[in-house]
Amino acid sequence: MRNRVASTTGKPEQIKTADDLTVKGKENKKKKRVTWSCACPVCEREGRKKRGMSAAASSSASPVPPEDDVCSVCHDRFRIPCQANCSHWFCGECIIRVWNHGAAVQPCKCPICRRLINLLVPANISEDQNDDPQLHRVLGEIEHYNHIFGGAPRSLTQRLQDLPFFMRRLFRELMDPQRTLPLVFRARMILMVALSAVYVLSPVDILPESVLGLFGFFDDFLILVIVFLHLAAVYRSLLLYRHGGHLA
Image (cartoon, rainbow, N blue to C red; front, side, top):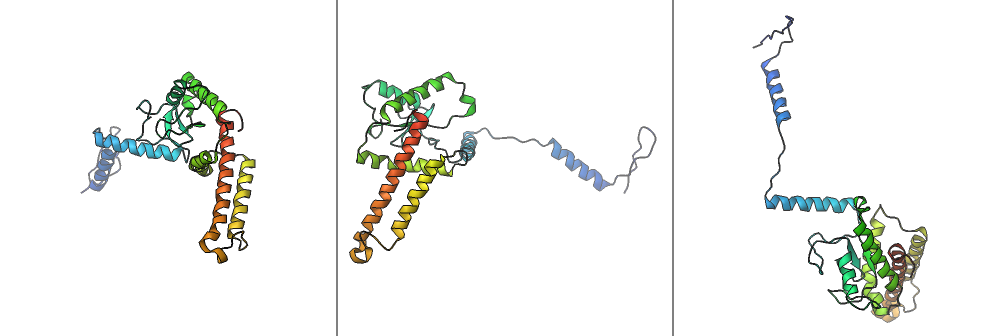
């Protein structure tokens, strides 16, 4: 059935069917529809988790402290987080306070694992925090700490203990498109990896596997350890240049 609607000017308008009116009514309902969000603790927790995942994705592979972790010194959320060479995270101001309470001529020990801290690497700072005076003060104290203890001689045991920390950070930085390593460092890294791969895959070894069996893999393992230690030492020098103002 068709209904004719008259306009105020007296001119006939277009004839609308009942189906047209139904479609128009549905469109009006869609326009009036509003979105809402639940404010219960469960939904808020899920929302924070999703926002944390999106933030982690946006920051790419840049190292950040775990979302559910807290500083072991103040037992609160991280403020200006920094990571020590033992892989533990602290507030920058908290770990500097720990050092100030001890001997000024010695590096402080990690409050968790009790290893000597000879390098502090702050997390990436967002652009809206660049004008914070407290941030610049804490970063200056971290650079001062690295300048004093970053170039101190380290034993082979300390180098092996720090190896996982530097290799994890190096791998994350290689996977981060927003950060670029110096060309000289990339060239040295590619050269060392290529030479070690050639030696490991080559049938000519110092200790041949065909004669010594499993013991013949010892020289291959030793070459890989030396390469990783060299890469960690070069990358450590790069971090010291960024956060300590000098090369080790």
